[in-house]
Image (cartoon, rainbow, N blue to C red; front, side, top):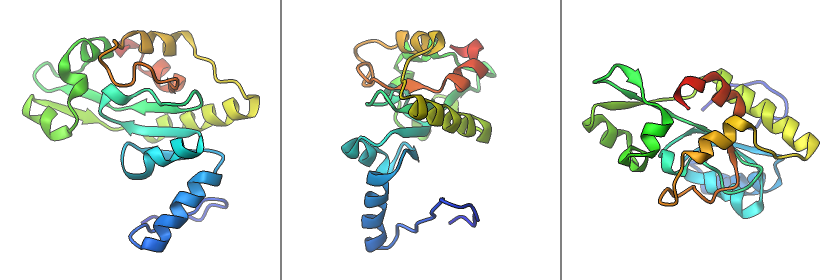
Length: 173
């Protein structure tokens, strides 16, 4: 429940059955949809509505299905080494398949959520991409995707990770 006073932004309480139907309708007619990796996140795929997937976890699903999807994955922090684990290490191990934060905690890892600037800049990327109708990948986005292997669920995804996020986190790519 948010108290925002922004034009063209709708806050919808989906505890009500009718509002769940409205939510599906709104996703179907939206220019793009900002979500997290849960609940209605995948409804946008049904309507080919572009998505910004925030705080995305598990990392084995961090590339969106559609070419116009942008993802901002979570980072994983290793409490034993006191550092954020780089994505090459994550994707070359079973860590990327861990599907819950509790599983990671048992291994002494924690997930780190996206910060507001990550999300804001992904929105800017989306607006520019939709305006220009160009969904190309930068070298950093290609490098992130090159870390995936065919066993990873999102290997065949056509989306991309936010370039702003990758630029900001170059040291872990």
